[in-house]
Amino acid sequence: MEPSNKFLIQEEEVYSGALSCRGCGWALLVRHLSSILGKETVYVVPASCFSIIAGPYPMNELRGTIVHTIFAAAPATATGIRTALDRQGKKDVIVAVLAGDGGTFDIGFQSLSGAATRGENILYVCNNNGAYMNTGIQTSTATPYGAVTTTNPNSNIKKTWPKDLMGIIAAHNIPYAATASLAFMEDLRMKVKKAKETEGFRLLMIDGPCPPGHKTEPDKSIYVARQAVESKLFPLYEVEHHNYRINYFPSEYVPVKECLRVQGRFKHLFKDDSEEILNDIQQHTNDYWDRLRLLESHSFQVKN
Ligand SMILES: Cc1ncc(C[n+]2csc(CCOP(=O)(O)OP(=O)(O)O)c2C)c(N)n1
Ligand code: SF4
Ligand SMILES: [Mg+2]
Image 1: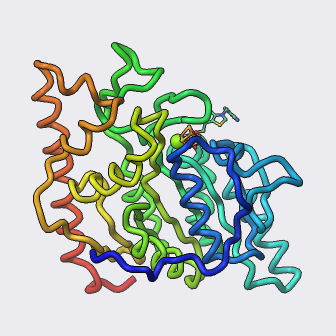
Image 2: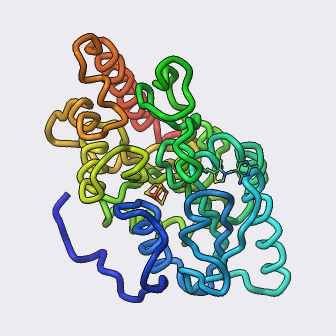
Image 3: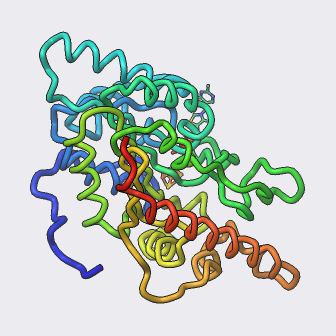
């Protein structure tokens, strides 16, 4: 994708200063997201690093309204807010959940599934940084295979594959779901706009850089995010009902180990006897990509 200035922010909806670490994905994501969703938006925030970054009232980071809620129930809270706004005739106001992977894949999973099944008119945004970062890097079901966190048995290395949340959400037959990366800002902004304009339950899954959790240098956040897309570890695609569309096809082959190598959470994989694990991760990545290609080739032919 060619660089362009199409994604320059016209109007800032965040105040200067943020309580995030340097190089945090949350801060950059919310800056772009809010510039598109507008200042009327109501953000529903379950426990996560963003609960802190958003700031304590009245020193909110965002111009929009922020409703902090419990970990397990952000989509339920958003459902109630949506209903109240509709009753007031404020149908144009966006209700957006901003949740981490822990709040999405694990603790808020039942509430997410419920809201998606009911077709609630809300936008759900998951900043997936692959662990419970706010409380000290505990494993979630989004944590990548082979990553070190603070809570895995046997040397703290994760030995199960992450949950296919996008596949699960697609099975709910919702009007719009997409993955996006902070290294592909034009694509990300296009998806936020599309999600804003779509009626019904929408979900965006963002690959979230986290220097302390991924053991990376803050200035490498965008580089790592780009490598994740280029190596197909984090493919960019959209799902409309059951129809898939891949948005970016890497032109060169980048092995997954090039993306893992720069992250300290995978450094044990680059010791002598770990080639097999790296091969497994490469194979899993290839298989997922092939499955996406297959799903795409069957798409826009079926009736929803
Ligand atoms: C029911 C409940 N359990 C645990 C916590 C403590 N807690 C607050 S934030 C957090 C981690 C959130 O992880 P994630 O959703 O991935 O967001 P991140 O911090 O990575 O942005 C935890 C465990 C809580 N607030 N409520
Ligand atoms: S720990 Fe990670 S997710 Fe949390 S504020 Fe720092 S960089 Fe962001
Ligand atoms: Mg997380």
